[in-house]
Image (cartoon, rainbow, N blue to C red):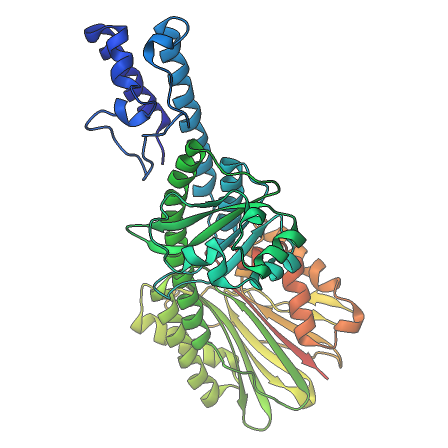
Length: 495
């Protein structure tokens, strides 16, 4: 991150040394002979977080030294104040950008910060990595979807944005078009769109760095003929290079998250079975590092059904691999003795204790006879199911038991209950409760309230029930947050 204090101390120390050993006038001549900050840069002036401290402070060549009004000390103070102001601005903007943890929020922040630096009101950012890998995205600032659509109808080669995206050389400082409508050779379609959207000038800045390569480009639009001054261009360029590195990290992070989600989905059922008398729906949200929450539904002999949910301790590839092994083992035990959920979980406990003694897990297995509307279940340290119908919304009273892997020998009584016609049994993992951030007792009450609030018209559709509960429990994107907790919901509606 940009260290403003360090850079300011470097500039102040340089000025003090110059004044003490060379005199004020000689210091001024060495610091600003041509009006650029490069002349005062020490040979080993540090760069912090990719920010070059050589920030120009004026777009005009200053008058000769003899014409500088006032005492030389005041001139030095003014210059120093300008440097501090510019560095402070960069520091604040890069801090705000570094605080973004998703690609979408980073793109929005980049557009807004760039508009402030170059003095524009509207903008457009296109993320298009030159290596063909990573996310493709288009974001607008002050532009509606229809206006973005109009901009996309302009031939790519007819715009500075398109040429920068295609690798136009010598664009490190950006490409300015100070008077678009005054250009004689402007593409007719470009002229038409500019007139319709009401912009008269543009400035394009590539999003590229040596380490990240070319990731895309940002375009800012001016309502009147204008272009950023040299100082504005330099500050925007410094910010864009830092932003490029940050975007590259977020792109890599998003790619890793997508890979984790894909692996997690492959370890879960591709589709749910169709059994007469029951309808099924499932929802799964994976944490960014991948977790061990899982669900399963498998048809058993005599048109019966086995339902299971569980959670392996930890997160990351190890937990995902353990989840896959545990789920596969439970399927085998369920086929052999599914009508006895206690025996299924007892076998699973023995396997876990022998093969992974350092691992713990929770699990719930339910043996269902849809024709008789009969459910027998056993749980190992798992959250109790919830029954939702037209006349009731309540938790199933299950026996208290420890998670798998915590006792030398696991066994707990099973529980039997009968869902009424039209009722839905909701199985879930504790990630649904933990992601809310509430204490567990409040989270259970919140889940009960979320299920009870499902409209009666939707209670006969297990997918609608699962979606409504998920949205109510985890609003505003919490179902896709950076929480390490996975979320699983498995809904079974009995006809």
